Length: 339
Image (cartoon, rainbow, N blue to C red; front, side, top):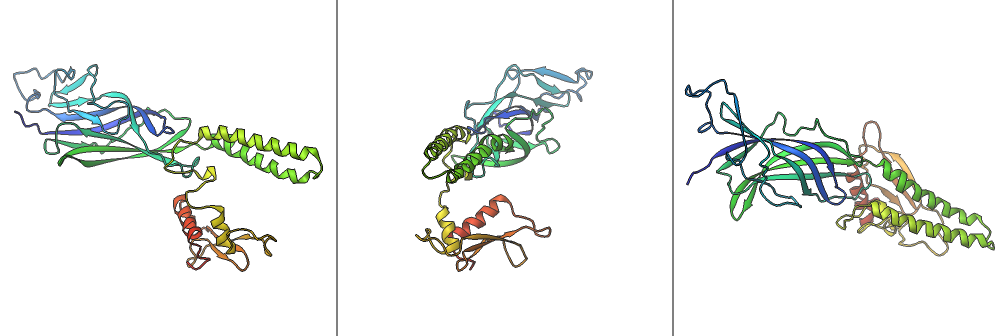
């Protein structure tokens, strides 16, 4: 039995991506895997062999290749293998293997800010059979992931990547793994023009029903037309929203815990509008944020007003995630400005 101790250097290149909406990532690309076989396949320092031969080519049936697999693959679970790919063996004993394929991996999407969301999907490469002590992974820091041949996607904009080396435990045995994290940002122009703008226009048209006389027959017909139009269009819009129940888009108008009732109670102190209405109509006041004033919204229930700090040149607006977290914190706890 031979104890194999090998060191692999990894790099990669992607050509195109798709299908993030369906919670899986499809990438067309290839890996560049290098390892040393100086004890068996090195001939540039041996006078017995011809030094003019700089490289030899073979297939994986004729030489040892590291057994690797895509851990989070959804269409094929098995060792990466392609007998048609030529393996380059250099005179100094360095072996280069570049398997290419269409890799499909799982990708859990967060659609809270749809269609202005960004998604990060992982491609996890791990060893199969050889433990951490037998096979070591290293990443080529010069070009860990190349994108010169990347083709732009009509729905997703490629932002960047990170490459990390981790350790996986399988039955108390440790194995190396490399995690390629790809980040994409959704192109929102299509969804704005085809989803948001039409729905806002239909909602504005519904307000004009109050301009029609009460005894006019067109009032009922107009209301029914708007209702049917909204129902039909919402059906079309729902087809473009990612199908997941882990997170709910703000665009759908539904939040897991926050509702308009919470906001009304935060501003007025009442969970519903009185029968005779409010003496002072609820209002929103925007003020410039100061060092002693955070971006948490405050309210004056006596005046039925809510204060929202706005950014300045010195103090920029927080990220969307932080801002919505502050709003949820205020509205759901109903502190009325005491936080």
